[in-house]
Length: 91
Picture 1 (cartoon, rainbow, N blue to C red):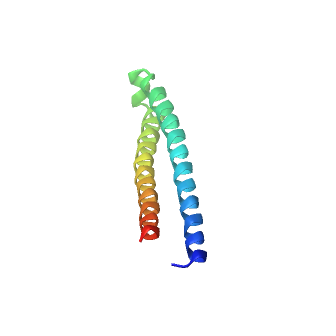
Picture 2: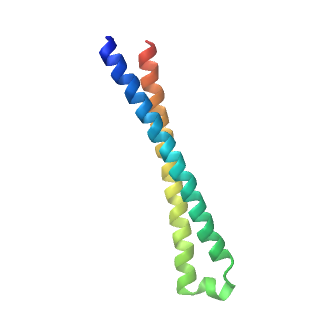
Picture 3: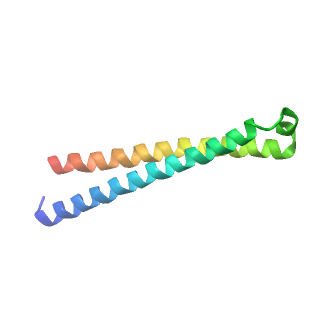
């Protein structure tokens, strides 16, 4: 591999690692929001939890939880991609 391509790949690795770091930051923010929504739902009286608004709050918390799982997978994929590119540089 020539120096120019190596430099471009190293820059790309840095950019991918930055993207992964930003995704982790977003993940942490999303955890806080999901926890707030879940706590708000949990603090409602049982009768209000069963009402339309309570059901909506619970659905939102569940959707945010699903989003967290998807974001976890995306972060793993991005980190794996960066690792594979780093391995290519070592060869």
